[in-house]
Length: 345
Image 1 (cartoon, helix red, strand yellow):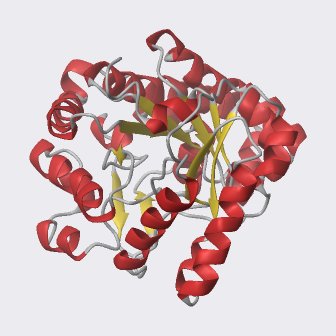
Image 2 (cartoon, rainbow, N blue to C red):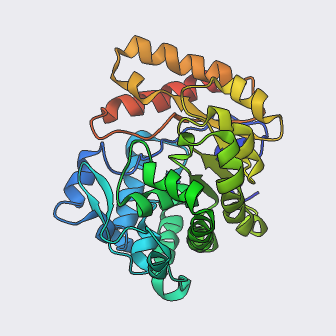
């Protein structure tokens, strides 16, 4: 079998027996690593995301440093927006900021169809370079789910309560649906480009879906996330679906077309698996804040997550959200070593 397909990450995603529990970290590329800050010094992040040489180096850094079982493509959920000409910038310590938020039908004009061969050529090249360097280590591609990307477009930047987003969703549902439909096509193309260039897993990030009640998620959001995940089903790679604060949405997120459901730290993995059923693997779910506690606490919590994960059909160890910039990289390395040691079959 192809070494990537036989990797523990792919085996866990397919709910097959593994040699040891695979582990990777959301946002493992960059942020906490001094070597990342050095190589990206003076280069805006969205510019770095369109430079294949830089993307390759940054994506490889945590694989070298942590010994994780997968690389995750260094990019951002707003990269496809930037690629089609949307005026968006990643402001340090703030997040994505849009110059022209979408507030009415005229705002949709900036969300044009993407041309993968021109707009995303740098993405294809970066993935090809990475796959050549990674050998038997899988590469995880990713994209932003339509709702989460839409929330930035509508709010104009990060939002705690998503008031403008929900106001459009409930008060102008046709406009909201058209925006999400266009974003679904955009993310679908972004994921497809990564898979066709060699990514062997993809993750759809719906970071802010947890702001929604299940009824609203099912009515206004689920069809668009389903469209994205269905768009790459023919390519045969495992699809991970993740959101924060989505304990009440887990069955719906699984039904959208996931093979693996990402779980944050609020729901134990065995309970998450019970909610979604036996046809899905799970990913997660160490609370990122635990990484700042004394090592004996971290070790106990890692063992707890592994014990919960062992009761599921398939488990990929991860944090319940992403690596934060002030995490100690050496502790992340120790967590990887511990996961591998404890879970060795």
